Length: 95
Length: 484
Image (cartoon, chains in turn purple, green):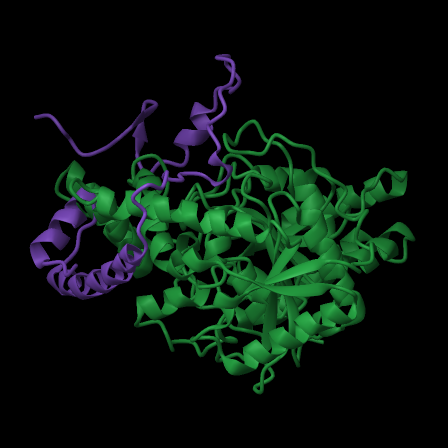
């Protein structure tokens, strides 16, 4: 399926990616080609096939609900671009 | 000395013919002398020498394992406490992990010495290493050609003998394809065999860590240390790690080899095909029997993969928001704009393409047509393998359709690039283990890889089969000119 500019911009917003006009144009072409590749999947009928999300049809293991982690807030916060008083700082959201 | 295998180096260390500190210095010097390959993003000499000193103490007490004191490198996708982990991306270009990946811990525990972190395609997305924020890696066999990807730095470094072995990850071929293009041995284990904890996630149902080494024997030594059941990885396999070395010398007389017809069709370079056929007849000479097998759904593995992997990636990479760690754009108007600018400046082109495709495939109205369709196709691809293994022990074919291509040759055409992984992708979709071993050269003296695919958790057999081949041939001992 060929994508149009509007769809590309909508997807970019969903993906939280800023794209300029030149890039939008490029994505229209490139993503349409990739979707063309993806559509080759329709050559095989899969109507009665059970979807396979994981190899070996694994299911996620559960563990006892116990505290196993130690407090590493300090070391984690050292990695952040902006922190203050133990809080992560982002631009103002509510006026 | 630098061309020695792990096995040989371990003997020298245990006989005290050399110390780990000396060995570590030797390889650190080689890395420094061969920056032209751009195979490393970070070299941590200080940490390496400290680990080597510890290893020497262990060696002195006689409590050493075979990997104690052996220098290795990690793909820069594995988190290393106190050492930069970039994943080849600007968005993690300043990220120093507060913890170790389980693979890193496991190798540290047995006394291996980490020299540094190898270059890679950003977030492991690529087949040429041209998608790294830290620049393209060069193939030591031919500097104007790509080393393959995404574990291209690991493959180039091992091929040039800058390090005896390195870790890698394989989501659609990222261990096997660069191993093939650089003429070394690479192993992608069964999904779940090696812990994904601390391995930056690309496509979680496909990602698997494994070794890149000079030989199957070295790969066996490494896998034995890397593999473990890890409660911190929810899909880690809860089964014992066998002694991969124990069966290496078993003769392979009677081995049943399946050759997928589909792997020898249009698109396969004729010289690569001829080298691979020659390798398979070598196995016949060793007493194996060969039969043709069908993997009909695998012809659609590439389209299937390029829906599933981007879908999982778009979800996994949503964590990079410029709030808790990593790069943040310097100018923005509000919170949403901060996310959008940070991600626009932090991610490279290929990563953005895959995030976009994945977001589209998962978006309302398209989920069934793309994502669900791909999951169903994935089952058919896995079922084909199951059927093929009913009367085969291993499958063999080419790892890649061509040998190493020129830097820039496919950079402008994403779909042409994706087709590099046509023979490796089906294995990831099924979750099976597979290796690439050096099998000869093409007319430009570029290495050709033979792919050997095994049944679930049958790594020991893969290693045995590869080791027997390497016992009978010497392709794996060839070193590129200028690095011998």
